[in-house]
Length: 543
Image (cartoon, rainbow, N blue to C red; front, side, top):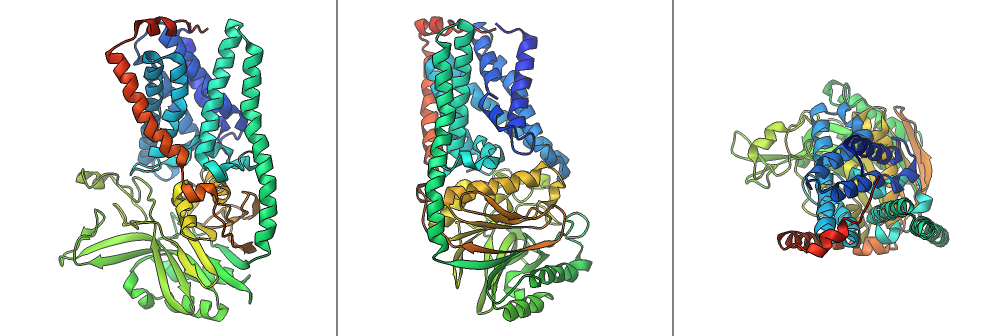
């Protein structure tokens, strides 16, 4: 059995392996397959020593806190308080998930417990995609965003398939370690682990080969010329300085004009490129509107650009509505605008809002939470959002407007594909995090959306990285960080729906549903214990 010092070391070591495996905080991807092994080992030791089940909470919290801080420490550049809350909150819910596994193993059975762990973890990740505290950044399947040749099968499973792979291999590695300690069929255990790691990679190579043929066919159908603008405006010291508002927008048009040609059909510029909040009904009265109108008319092209917008209402629309002195209500939005030379402007509001910055979770039920909101470029409190997923129509076909954080949500982008989007367009402002792993991870995760939907993806980031990603997740072109730049790229429009785009996150939904029943069953066994089972679970031995 492990003593207290060994348990602390094991918990810390596990957390370190998990964050060192994550993209750009180590990028040692194979470590993800053994990152949970120390935690599984000390859990078995605690179970065998007859210690209180609450003991595992401390060690798993240490492990997951190190994982969260190690992968996301750069959040402090945006908000120290928000970062601390994120570290603690995410670590606690991961700890609760692991505790559910521990209780299941203890009260139902060892084999049953290990089988339950993937259900619990995928269920947790699914929940973390679908509530107001949503933060899918640390989804385990995101680890492979820099190893896209390993996970071409994401077009069938989505990122949840990667998480299932990670948890399954970790359990098998732990069982192999236990076999080695007990000197029981270690060779068979190693063969099983090897198959579990190598078989998905082999399948990925096969799927990737098939998709390359599909790319050739799609390229022969329809290509469009796109211009991607990276203006590089400092979000802290310049972007929301309205004395330079016109200058900022002039620089966007100047950059675009360097690459626009007669074949250009789409120009994209970053999130909140038009940073001064304006009423959507008064767009044409905006001081900079004439120069945008004249440019797109001259170029005869479409412009997708981010903006801070607002709308006023006679009645409260949502929890984000704020009452004005005249009795009306106002809502602010983080919006995508499609400016076209031949029709009215289309507005789509960001749907997936950043908790604590753009949205105060559950403030509808606890109103004073709004007072804890982080300043979001001069707007404090929850923004309004679209109630359903939307896409934008253009003369050349439909596109998916994806604003910043939305690109981390796999099912959100899949639904845009399902609605008919043929091209994924990400607009973002990653300058809040400065030159850290944050913007690199964000760019990398976009590669997973391309694979899941088998769509090309173009990305305009205010300070970088902007770029073009093919439908197999390969980076075709990218810009440097903190450098004004513009990219011209011919990209194909992809119309075929993948299994994941068509059916969504089946793995996550199923796991979330089944994990509830598994846990209820485990608790029922605690109420009415099975004595022979307790004796069987004590057979686990650790060092």
